[in-house]
Length: 483
Image (cartoon, rainbow, N blue to C red; front, top):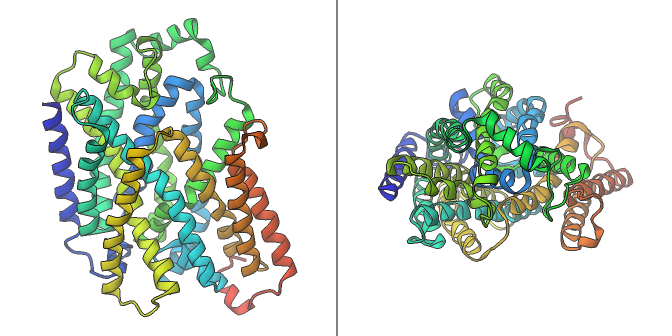
């Protein structure tokens, strides 16, 4: 029954995904940007559900369960993560309509007149996307494995869920992502609060009673900034830098950033940014689930599996368990579909077309994007089956790389003196430093996120090299820079 309900939900998602793309145009404007026609409700849910991922539904409770108050950093960066959009979003949307941009790299490479920058951003995006997409597939595999008591292995569960995603993204593009995310977002909102309030009541007699017990028994789990990955108290440097790098990465993720180009109007975009923090309200009960498991279900490994473990341990009707498992799958799929769609679009529009086939027709671009959607899904699936890295560790690693694009965007829109060599040197320095700091533990200080050191190197290199090289054509720069 649990499996039947879960598969039924996947069938509904597939139907909505295929149905939603029936009226969009067949070229990149329709497949990638939805003909720039998304309204407030759909844009709100496509952005909200895209971040309400396997990380939120599985990794969030996993952090609350294993690291306590450290999980509050998720609420912090989610609340302010889109604030930068309020300032640069309308400008980006206008430029998109003026020049026909549908990806982030098209905007930045045009501003700095650099094919190399377009290719570099495509590569950085893919490097960041793969672990993030792997995370979503791992989450789907966990769910199927636990709810079937091991009868469906992780690899098969991930294949089932992402087979559905692959079909509707292949068929409908961004509109399939948009409308399935709207369905999944509403579904997850209801499930999050139902489950987040029910489990503390079932196990402790209520949310207040649960936190009273935790305060008496394991008070260290409720003290900010919580526990680090090694089980010791997380430093404030580690906690605050994780928020900083996440905020910068949040607003610049290419699959997120591309949604600026889909907005119906600047007013729609600003309204979405203003209302977006309300989506974090639905993360609060998700964290309650993790806290509920600390005393009642000790020793669960991996900690990311605490939600399905609790569900299968309680005497709940099979239909109810199936619905909650479908919600966890919805969390995984609503992010994975946006990622795989953006990855294919970026590789075609920003890498292959720019470097090898500038004469590629609209129909050829759409066809090639669809092929790459399949290929990228296959590569991520391989890593999802083979990788043993924590979901949250994967996410933070991705944010460290993608955050390096933030200084490039700010310079593109607000600093007329920035130059092509400066931008390229800054990106290179930031990515190298982030990688080195990730690979060499001895360089860690106060557990500060490696991406922060990468950003520092990025900005210094960008400023120094830009000032040492000739300025760009003022007339060209004036089309982009906000004075």
